[in-house]
Structures are given as C-alpha cells and as structure tokens.
Image (cartoon, rainbow, N blue to C red):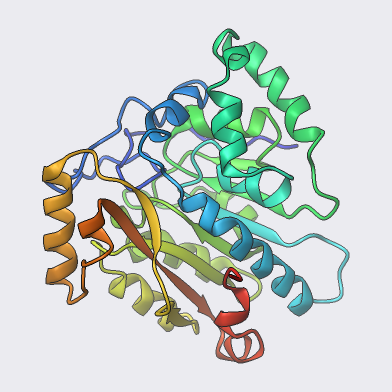
Length: 305
C-alpha cells in the first residue's frame, strides 16, 4: 500500500462523503463533525439512524462495472484502477474489494469492541478485519476527498492504495494526483455530486491514458447537466437510469424534506412515493464511450431483483 496524503482543506457536505467549503443548500442538514474525524466511528454513528445506504446500492453495480472494464482492458495482468471521488473513509473500496456489506460496516464500527478502542488500536483491528475478507480479484482503488483525516485512515488500514486530500473545485490537481489518475478506468461517486462541477472532472479526463467510465449516484435535488456536458466533450455518453431510483438516507427533519420535495419538483421530477415518503433519492448516471454503452447495456449492470 502506498498512502499519498496530500494536505487538503475544508469541512464536509451533506450529500454523503466529501468535505466542502461550498455552503450546504439552505434546508439541508450539514454533518460537519462526522466526515473528517481521525476514524470512521462518528460517521457510522451519525448516518446509521438515518439509514444512509448509497454505497450499498453502488456495491453490485461497481463490481459489475469493474468486470466489464476488465474485459475491455488492454492485454495486461494489472487490475482495473478505480478512482473514488468523495471517497471519505474508503467505504466504496471496502465494499468493492471485500466480502462485507454496508450493514456489516455499521455493525463493525458501532460495536462495543470498536467503541472501546483508541484510533491506533482501531487501525490495527481494521487491518486484520479487511485482510481476512479481501476478495481474490481486488481492484486498485485510489481515493480523492478533501477530508484529510478520512483519506489518511483509508490508506492506513489498506482500503486505498493511494489517497489524495485535494479540492479540485478550488485548485488544480497536484502532479502526483494526475500521475496516478491517468491509470483510472472507472470513476465512482456515491456522495458529493451536489458540490462538484466540471472543474473536478476535466483535468482527470484530460490526463487519462484510456477511456474512462464514470458511475455517479446523484441526488434528485441536484442537476448533473454541466458535468454530463463536460463528459460528453471528452467522448463519453451519459445514460440516466430511468427504471428506478435509489434511497440515499432519511431526512433529518420536516425542513429538509420540504427542501427536497421542492427541489425535485422544480427539476421536473415527481417526488411522490420517494421524497414524500421521507428519504432523499439518487439517480444513477453512467457515462462511457458509445461503443462501451452498446457492448455493456446499462440494464446488465443494474441489481437483479
């Protein structure tokens, strides 16, 4: 494991993972005290009661995408490199590369045993925990997030091969990030899209040595149009899953629900049975070269009933 931990800045957003200096939309709840602690216990304690679940939805889809990317790779024995944007404590990497579920992680980090450990002891415990559950065909996961402590933890326990605490919305990527990101074949996002723009994606796409797939779960309160346009300018066609949406988490209060219902309605979508039932919902956007979209239909990557 190589842990590049470039110093970042900022707090965190309410969309699921990444630290941010951009204000949370009025009406949304911020979780600034949970996303950049020395270890992930506060994260799971805060989000568990709200049933935060987007990484669970991403787990099977990302695994299928990695398999597809392996089939389209050049003749090489190297594993597929995944860049997880807004990676937080490496949760998507944990779910992608280990025989664990998100429910397992909630139980693990809120258990009495975890509660009684120091951060240093938790790191040692987690190294053993994940090593014992490592899949035989792990992807190479690199992480990008503003939350320096979260990045550091994910690297220390072996979830990320490399991690970068940088904010591409406010500063250009470091040379080391570009050198590493050029190998990415899949970009994943399960939280933070609300606060991202083409500024984050363009330098990564420009440096990539091969066409990249981008799989993003985006809150229905958020427009993805500017990012999709950036991806299109780089030769990627964006498909939007229209068959169903994915629960993100419960609302914290009536104000947050009111905000979500109004935002979804203003975007031209119907909140009935989704946001009106008490949950933020996300939509999956998958961007790929046209030939890959034809060869690997979106429906084949979706969870099976």
